[in-house]
Image (cartoon, rainbow, N blue to C red; front, top):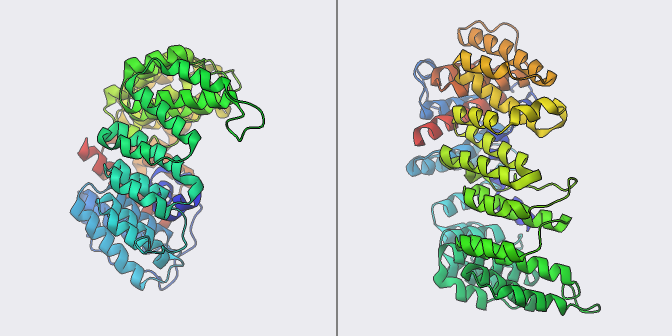
Length: 505
């Protein structure tokens, strides 16, 4: 399953490096070769773009900088970021054509092979799943010997093509993975296409998996009788039976997890509350994994009331943590009010509330809702937590750094000063002083007075401040001043992406 994620969605990994990872994490690229082996056709008036930047011309600046980066990673990162983020479908088609044209002539290692999964993902985003399977050689009677296309099958199901996705499983997925995939598709059917739920359930062969599917559907119905059924089945577990039938705790926990997931899929809040009242509290390491999956879905969809319902049964010991950072990217597209509601609902979740609150704050910053992020940070006591812990040993220090760069960039100064006055953490105070110095330097650079080349992590901070300001000219000038070609291309990608997102909001 993991290998297919690397095979089919490899472009997502590059996008993450290009648009989400801190610029400081990138090592400086070597000086460009006299004749770049991967020249990209670019059409842009640099001075006109710096004076009046638009997403389209900033994207061209990103490609222009990528031409100077000798290894080729900046070009792939830029093209794939634009394929992911340009809101215009026609523009995305043109980006794909330009990427393919470049791949035909470039001498970048691995690029021609890379285009295949990128093109497949592009076709899938357009809804052309048949084309995506064809690109990967999966339309043949005997498919090429590549990894299982489970991610692509699930994407097809998420697009509402449940029947088509189910029909591919027997031919394309190995036997021991098929029923796990069918259960995930059943969950999607309950959420998006209930008329296909019977077909998804009936396709499940394994006896244990069928039991889990029944629990999933019972949760969707809000069937109160399921509690007695689960307990009776769990009591039947005996040593010597094949796993997991020999473990009553596993049978009980996994069944209850499915009941809860079924209620979430069907948006049956009353059924969810009833099931939580009957399920044992979440207290073990295995429960932490179960809780993490539920929390990710509820956070991703902004379900504050559901978080409040789940909170009282989260009784994990202090040494257990929840993993909520995976697969929650869509959360940043939620309305700001919904993200604030998620942060507020986290107060009901006890020991895990900090992780949920801080994630919501980061998402608010990412979507440009800086005022809401700052107010939420203050109102929910995160300042007190920041002042209590060791700054560089807790995640809240990273959250504060993210928030502070945005607050300084957004202003006004009186608001930033009021927040700074409440910080007693030495690490926090040191960071505030550093950002103040770099904000002043950013203004000098934008005015044309660059001086000595800043370090990569300093560029990262200055670019964040500039982007938070909402001033396209400022952020574009800061990106343009970066000497390293790869760093400059990545910065232009971030600026173009931010401009697209602001326009969408």
